[in-house]
Image (tube, rainbow, N blue to C red; front, side, top):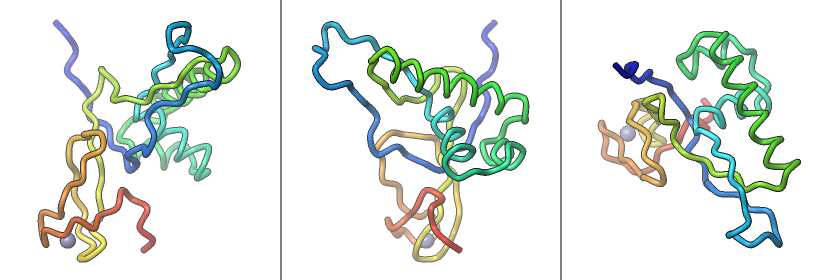
Length: 137
Ligand SMILES: [Zn+2]
């Protein structure tokens, strides 16, 4: 029996989901797939500099799981850089991803299942001016 999918939470919808090295034809290109939850772990810990327990809480996983996600994510990014592989960012297959939004108009916060490149509107005031957690409070 397959294990039930776990829920993970991200606050970033990546603007670009494919990175390709210059000068290598697509037919010869190898790909590395980075999950949106792995990207979120890298963003929170390595870019924003959050402590692991805080980042784990935001994504909705244990500290140990976050450590594993980070280790795997760093390995994938380095693999793409060192071996000249393309990097594809996509939803992971072993987890259900929810995006955390904050409405810019009324500051209402809500979660929705992650759908790439979707523009949701606020369930409270119907505004489409939302942010994925980058709003400064
Ligand atoms: Zn609103």
